[in-house]
Image (spheres, one colour):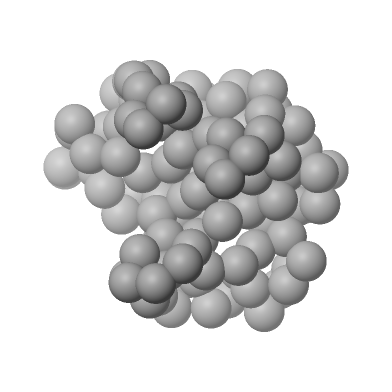
Length: 105
């Protein structure tokens, strides 16, 4: 089970990550593009920007930990992660996928 601090600490193991704020909560960017956020819809959740097929794998592997974001955001891969439920392995894997999907190189 992960906490917001675990999420943030793992994000910063990846190269060239910067933290900013978007819509009142922390976001994490690579190459100026958001790949993850914390605290939306509330402190129990994070979001990772996955490809739709990655989202499907995450939800299938840990259905209590992952769900699509609402509407078009979710259909395009924005995936909500319940921090108190997600395993360490899937926390790391989905953050790495999200970062890799957005990195400019």
